[in-house]
Length: 136
Image 1 (tube, rainbow, N blue to C red):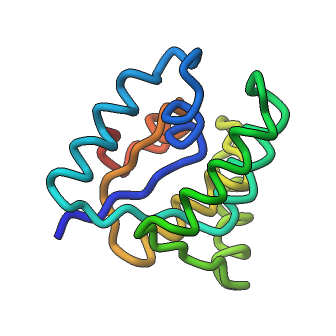
Image 2: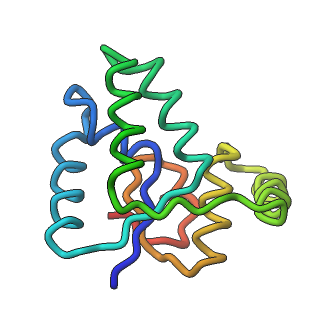
């Protein structure tokens, strides 16, 4: 089964029609559904996505609650961040001094490497800059 990480930008683009990547996100999530991909995310991405939708989307509360409902009822695997993941992500952001990865992105990178996921639905340039995953 194809396993793919969903970043907050993927969730935001799916739920917010005005987002420049909305059509691409709808296409990817539709493909994931028809091909039975195993979509996963992290609990930190859930927190970041909720905050992003709440503060940056027109009708933010509606989108944020809709997102929580979607994650709760759909078959998303939500991987919890461990203390080791946190330490590794902090090491990663310190080591990549020429990059401005958010800690959330670094945590996603660390978790993807830990559980062996090689693809992501992400519209964030940092996933491209990190360069170790296939961005759909």
